[in-house]
Amino acid sequence: MALSKEQIASWFQEIQQHICQEVETADGVASFQSDLWERPGGGGGHTRVIENGRIIAKGGVNFSAVHGRLPENIQQALKVQDDRFFATGVSIVMHTQNPFVPIIHMNVRYFEIENETWWFGGGIDLTPHYINPEEAKWFHQQLKSVCDKHDSGYHQRFAEWADRYFYIKHRKESRGVSGIFFDRLNTAAEGKSKEELFAFVQDVASAFAPTYTTLMRDNAEKPFTDEHRAWQMHRRSRYVEFNLVYDKGTKFGLDTDGRIDSILMSLPPETGWKYTTHWKEDGPEMFTENYLKTVHVPELRA
Picture 1 (cartoon, rainbow, N blue to C red):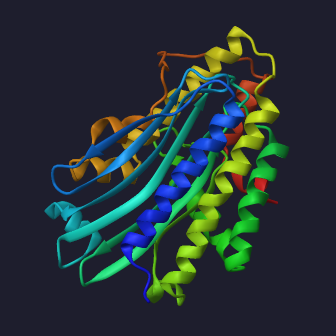
Picture 2 (cartoon, rainbow, N blue to C red):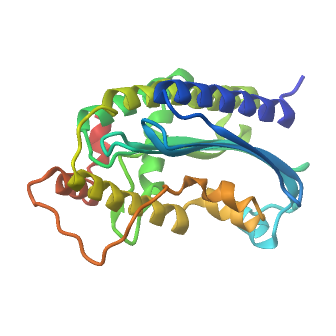
């Protein structure tokens, strides 16, 4: 029996629940609140948000399964003939209390145009406020292990794709230390069955909890100063700029009349932009900024 969109959506709901349980356990204080919602044009979702935790300042693990008719501009951008679509997925962003615990993002999704085409997309990327090269290399190794299980060419290809995607063009800097990013994976493009491609997406999603809870526990108790906190606000502002200007998921949600609170769940609880900022040239703040501006990110995968 062929893999159905209902089976895919059901599994996404299961991984949402699993990830929420693991993050709650690692945080040790806060719990996710649940918010079920319906989309007027068809479908709906389950937004789960955690706030004011011991480690997590604000985080969200969103599930959605929506359907209906595509706006003409998206139909043209996707180069499809039919406008009847179905989209389901899980999207995650975690913002942290301690500046030494990195921000993380994950998205796994399935999209289809009725009687025409389908594909999978997604990825995971890490945005440290302070770059720790050894920790970044460990993060990339976790993703490489997942990719290599399914295709020896996946990691290099999807890591380079992430480098291009998670880039703040107007700042000429990477958003973070990258990760993997992929889109439009289907049988025609990859020569793999729908079941094989879904198995890869499942393994990507399943890698999130053990990877990120390790980073949470390793960094949550590190002492930090007001200057560290100010730098965290500065780096959060870069994250916001990317999500509002470039992120395709944000744009798709807005263009298809998605639930605005769920779409903007990715934004941090607080941030700030100053007209000018000054940091010590030999300090860890400028090390991070120079690393991102000179695009040293591929070195972290060596």
